[in-house]
Length: 177
Image 1: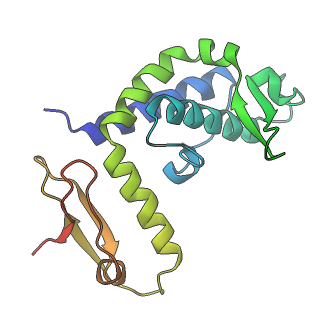
Image 2: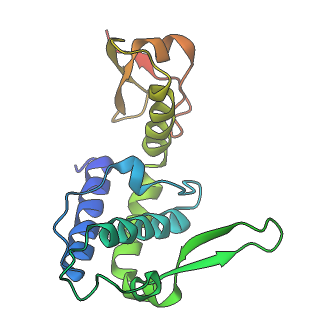
């Protein structure tokens, strides 16, 4: 049996490899927190589009000066800026042609995100808490009640401060003895 998080990791790695190859970029896979920045994990389709958008942004930043892609605008990569008329704020989105171009990446990515929403939300929460954690805080392994269980490594002070619930089994993560 393949663990769902392993599938997510391999789908993300394959998507990055495909985008990197397409734009002739030689850069390591960006951090998960960077890839999921701004992603709505409650909507796996939207989240997968945000991950691909973030990968494209990372690829643009890694393009070499002598690449034919170097001076092209974001739109050439399938990225568009839209403005929300009610708030006046603008944001980047994946253009319709980019959605079509990367559909073979978007479909498996959205399925993998749907299967790993709880782990991704826990990772996001823990990332936020880690920013506020004092240096030298010992880490402990915690697990949920899922079968198979999800295990995460977190600073002990975070476990002392907050109860972290699994989105799948709705049980709190508890320290492994």
